[in-house]
Image 1: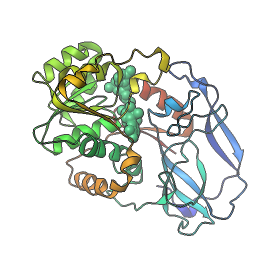
Image 2: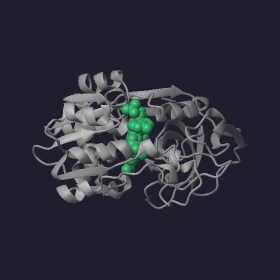
Image 3: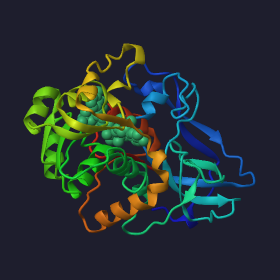
Image 4: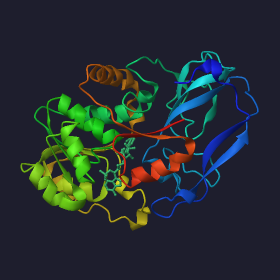
Length: 349
Ligand SMILES: NC(=O)c1ccc[n+]([C@@H]2O[C@H](COP(=O)([O-])OP(=O)(O)OC[C@H]3O[C@@H](n4cnc5c(N)ncnc54)[C@H](OP(=O)(O)O)[C@@H]3O)[C@@H](O)[C@H]2O)c1
């Protein structure tokens, strides 16, 4: 943790920008680190020294031109953004004292100039930090990743007694929490991941009942082995072929929480193969429900109560994949799209 007394305002702010739109999997040259002078604060602004920022798979969608209001695309030269935590260094905003920890959306830079605005999903807010609630947890287990997993399972997926739950990308930030929450609620949980090392991790560390490597075993064979009698709830982080395979094994009345579709993010929509067996949803009376974590923002306190209690008594573990320094951020992002991460990917500054 940085001692706020030793931090002064910088002459310039370093930030990671989009240098060009990627073609498929991003490469290092698609990003640039630039410096812009820091010229002080306007009224109602605060300067935050970032300590951690979150690296998320969904950012990939924003690197392509598009028009989604949720995933506003970046233009060439734009500074990337995303969730971050840091400490206030200078403040001209009521309620944001120097030294306090702030959760905000100006990640991908070493310092953020934030405007304190009325509460909204991305407005800066002061967070309490203690020995259990480490600042970086507010980016993951106690923040957007926690809410996504918790709400996706319990509210969107309507987790019900005796459900067999299937989680994809199960060694990642969202998937790893989903596996553990479903286990803590007493369910049989099966999982898919992209390596044998991850399959062992998901079973041995996260407590899944069974896991398979979709790259070597294949989705159909893997699901048949780990869930021979089918599944009731699919927590879908991957989309595409994973979703199609899950539709084949969902039992009557089953549910899918459509959380993300990472398998499609490096491919233009027109070139994606699509899910061709949606008729299964009709045949089996399935419910497929998409969601964004922010739709359940009002349930943040409930999620935090559950997850902080599980963290405190050690029933939930929260692995992190940490890289040091802004210059390493593009590599960490590319690595997670390639499946090299276990747990939540974070940049520490
Ligand atoms: N709905 C929401 O509000 C919300 C919020 C946050 C994130 N999400 C979604 O949640 C999902 C997980 O995001 P995250 O940020 O936590 O990332 P993450 O799971 O920590 O990392 C991404 C993982 O995706 C897997 N992956 C990458 N390419 C794949 C492919 N072609 N096929 C199958 N798996 C692939 C890799 O794991 P393997 O090695 O196992 O393949 C990789 O480790 C994403 O789909 C994201 O968009 C949704």
